[in-house]
Image (tube, rainbow, N blue to C red; front, side):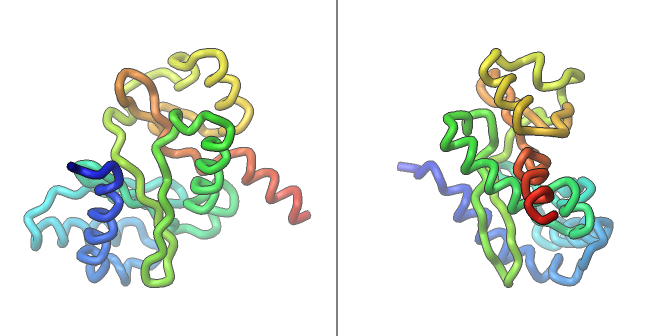
Amino acid sequence: MVMKYDYIARAQHFLEQLWPYICDCENDYWKYYEAVRAYNYHKSRRVYVCHGASRISIITSDYVIKFDYNEAQTKFIGGCMEEVKFYQFAKEEGFSYLLAPATPFLFHDRFFIIMPRIYNVGSSNDYIHFYLNDDDRDFVNAYLYDMHEENYGWKDGYPVIVDYACNFFLNEEKVSRS
């Protein structure tokens, strides 16, 4: 029997293999693209890299590994830690089905998150709100920002948010620091 969380163990093992390629990339997202290209060449793999303003996503066939690479941007728009916190909150509130699960992972003193891969990210030209029922829309509107078409994909005919680091808690932390 295949366990539900096998992708997490595979992701952790994969990161051990990828680490020698990406460990010196610093805060330059182009270096990550080049490192993963070298990894793909040497290991005959098809791994992809995407980046936003604050994080890198390493995408394989069934999981994604994310990590912060731009600390200055992470302070403004969120990063992996905010995503993990928000996933726990959504779970407590009964809305975690709207989100790709974020599993934290510490490796070489660096914080990563592992998510299952959600397909067809960016395949819609509409905001996610058009596809949600009233309760789900209210939850998303109340707590999440930056909900454009590149931040959600599809699973079983319903949208699943893959980037939810820019959320209510980020603003709450800024207010409490003042």
